[in-house]
Every structure is written in structure tokens, then in C-alpha cells.
Amino acid sequence: MYRQIKERVIAVADYVINTGSTVRQTAEVFGVGKSTVHKDLRERLRYLDKRRFRLVEQVLGYNLSQRHLRGGMATKNKYSNRQRQ
Image 1: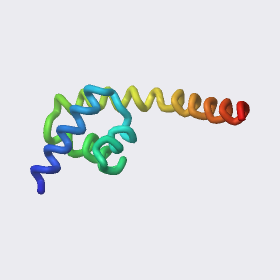
Image 2 (image 1 turned 180 degrees about the vertical axis):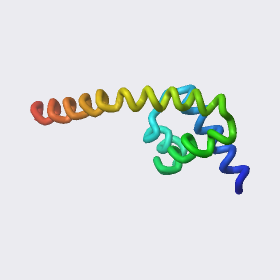
Image 3 (image 1 turned 45 degrees about the vertical axis):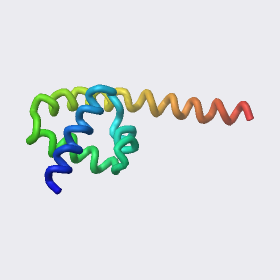
Image 4 (image 1 turned 45 degrees about the horizontal axis):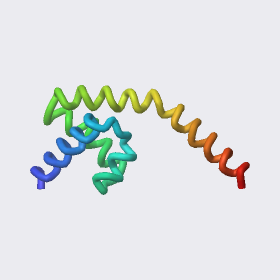
């Protein structure tokens, strides 16, 4: 069982590094919960591969800094679509 978790953590980390996707997007692709992805990337990866961990931290930091912009655009689109109907 441990080997499967380790393989998933590495696969999730590589996916995030290569695509720059958010935790929510990554969870959907891998069919696991957001909490699982977050635990894999923030806790488990640190002990498995420090280089990947640093790269993932950069992507997650960027996504966090952009979160308010994505939320604002989603709200704008929501109300723009309501006015058209």
C-alpha cells in the first residue's frame, strides 16, 4: 500500500509541476479529494523528493497569489451571464 501512495505523490507532483494546475484541478484529474492532493504535496512529498517539493511549492504559491483574480473573474462572468438572459 505504501508504494502506491508514494507513486501517486510523485505522479501528482509531476503533474502540478508540468501543468501548473491548482489543487482542485489536480484532484479532479487523479480522482482523489482536494485534501488528499494537499496532504500529498505539502506533507508527503517533502520527505520523498526535496527538489520536486521546492518546485511544487513555487507553483502552489503562484496559484495562491492568483486565487483572488480567478475568483473575481468567476464572479464577473456569473453576473455577466445573468444579464444576458
